[in-house]
Structure formats: C-alpha cells, structure tokens
Amino acid sequence: MKQYMLDTNTVSHLVKSHPAVSLRITEVPMTALCISAITGGELMFGLAKVPDAKRLHQAVMEFLRRVDVLPWDSAVMTRYGSVRAAIEKQGQTLGTLDMLIAAHALETDSVLVTNDAAFSRVAGLTVEDWTR
Image (cartoon, rainbow, N blue to C red; front, side, top):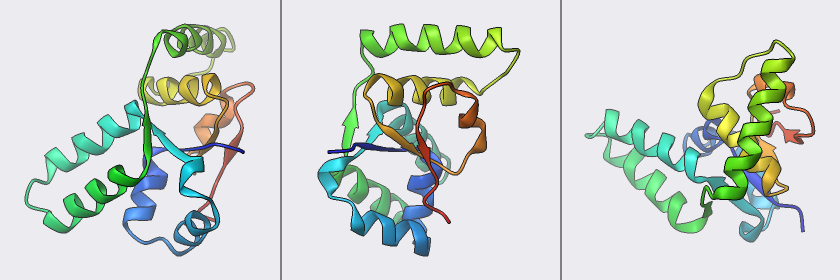
C-alpha cells in the first residue's frame, strides 16, 4: 500500500476544511497517512504562537491522535545529508525544514503531499498536491 506523508501545509489545509484536501483524505485509508516528526514540530510551533486558539488546538491534537508520526532516525539523517548535498550541488536551495521532510519522505518511500512547488527540486521525490 502506498504511504502518504502529509506536509505541514497540507495538514493546515485539512484543519481548515479545504474541500479538495478533505475529500482526498476520506478516500485514503488512515493507515496510509503519516507525517514526519518534523511536521509535528512545525504544528506544535504553530499552536504555541496562538495559545488561545482552542478550536485550532483541538483540531490539531485530534488529527495527531489519528495519524502516524514517523520518527526521525539515523537512516533519515543519512538521507538528509545526501539530499542536501545534491541540492546544493545543483545550485538550488530549499528551506532547512523542507529538506528534512523531503529526506524523511524519500527514506520511508512515501509520497509527499504538499502544494509547495519547492519540493520539485528534490530528485526522486514523489509529490502530490491534494489542493487541486
């Protein structure tokens, strides 16, 4: 079964009930969905910035109870090194957290679900945009 790693922007769209993202989520078994621990950290940072947003906190925490959060391990660490070196060799840039997430998706053989076109710079990464 294909595994889908949701990027932070996709989770944000889901929490905000984006129609296309919400529909696609219902078409995929929950067991096929995951996020990187890096995305989990980004979600926690977002919540920390708006401590009084009770509804948002509830929605994010409910999501996190239902989806697998994949740990960042030594295999992903090694993949990150090669991904970053390859991007820099091409003269390209990608945000640090985005590189970490891309390496995680590559190492776990996951389809990265994002609407951030910057991920197209990562060789071998399969990306799907569920906002369309």
